[in-house]
Amino acid sequence: MPQGKLSIAELVAHCDQLLDAPATRDYGPNGLQVEGRRAVSKIVTGISSCVELFERAREASADAVLVHHGLFWDGMPRQLTGYLYHRVATLIEAGLHLVAYHLPLDRHAELGNNVLAAKGLGLYSIEPFAEYEGQPIGCRGRYPEPLARELFVERCQKLFGQTPLAFLGGPNEISTVGIVSGGAQREVHQAIAAGLDAYVTGEASEWVMNVARESGIHFLAAGHYATERLGIRALGQHLAQRFGLEHEFIDIPNPV
Image 1: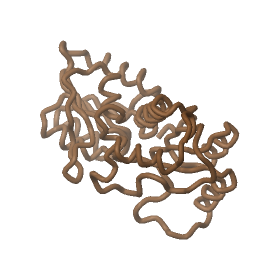
Image 2: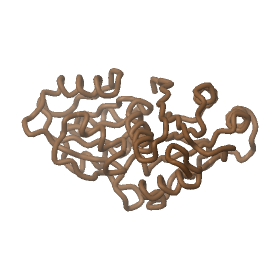
Image 3: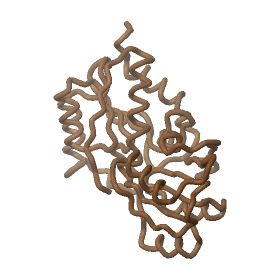
Image 4: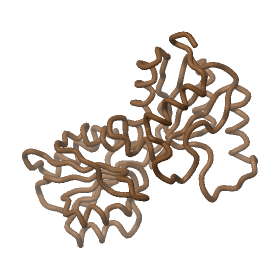
């Protein structure tokens, strides 16, 4: 296959190896979810599978769409009806491949949502944090000099592009932070057990406020969608550079 054009099998094999996709059980299949019709010279990346993303990928003359949130999840109906039919039909009519990586893209040590967030927040001594199925999926780090909590909230807002829901039950100055992107509110218990000053994720459940307040930790929910922009865009950039492909990230903001 010439430079700038790649078979879908080669693209997926590279991503599977790069992200160590089989390392942990996931909530849905990683890798190729819908097969398209042609070799890949342009990829579109996006966060969540939806008709709008697929339509815009078709308009952008893409050959493949790479997402963090694929079409199929544990516990879903297996029938291709309703919204799921329309999503699959849009892909097939456009001849687009759909490739998805979920937890492998959260935990990757270079391209992962969490390591990129830790670096974006200015943390040092970054290391794995928060185990799932025996594998760490998040990151933790520290500030060389303690950071005022108000400045930390501002950094989160700037990095993720929206004002976080912040339960500021921790110390006035922050030294240690844990991060697990997406819907990882339960991992706050691991942050508390680790004695961290602050924990950042995407979503918050009702019980979180009082747990954070009573445990003396800052809890910031910066948006499920917003905290997972970083990884898929980095993966697209990596593939473009590695194989000479064209890459476009399509943002369809979701406030949740």
